[in-house]
Amino acid sequence: MKLFSQIYQKVMSRLESELPHWLFYHSPCHTENVLKKAIFIAHKEDVPKQDLFLLKVAALYHDTGFTVNKENHEEISCEIATTELKDFGLTEDQIDLICGIIRATRIPQQPKTKLEMILADADLEYLGTEDFKFYGDKLYKELLHYQPDLSLAKWNEIQFNFLSNHTYHTNYCKLHREPQKIKNSQLLRDKIDYTSTKKI
Image 1: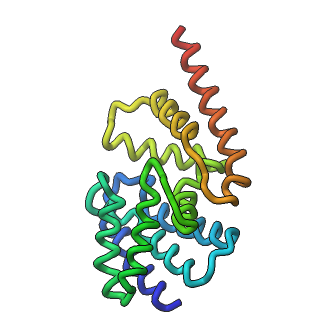
Image 2: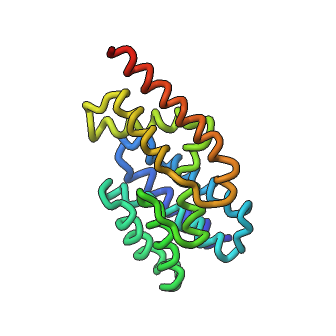
Image 3: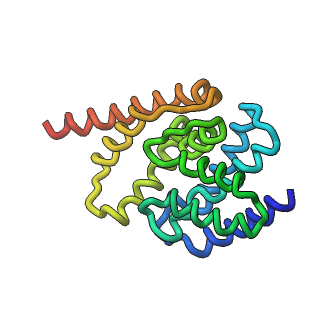
């Protein structure tokens, strides 16, 4: 679709030029990855073509707020999307739906519609994959910019608690990502126990 291609070019150009260099996790690659995962999960969940367009646009914009501020970045992302998508000819109803999908990525996630559930899961899909450590390391490196004293042991505890409280929302991720997420959680638990044992 030509319109989506135009939106894609504008958003990715913004992310590549305006995102802070210390965002090792929330990078343009993250947005690309979430977009791909959202499309993949949407196909598994039989999302209609017209809804897929809205989902894809929301995936593109969901972290644009990081170009302005880490805090409340979902709401800033909505403001950016609202301004730019009007210029692309999207209706207010379409933009409202897109903003709802973007807001569904806010932690703790509370998605209500199928499209919101899909993007929420796509954003944290890595939790239930064998790439969990790879992306977790990127996020840890990013967080060190804000919290230089954050120890690896404390980070493992944060990750373990996050996984323990996290829930997937789509049928696909519940079936295909939850089992690996449980394994990843146990690996973290083992590291925490090992660290605790060494201190004794």
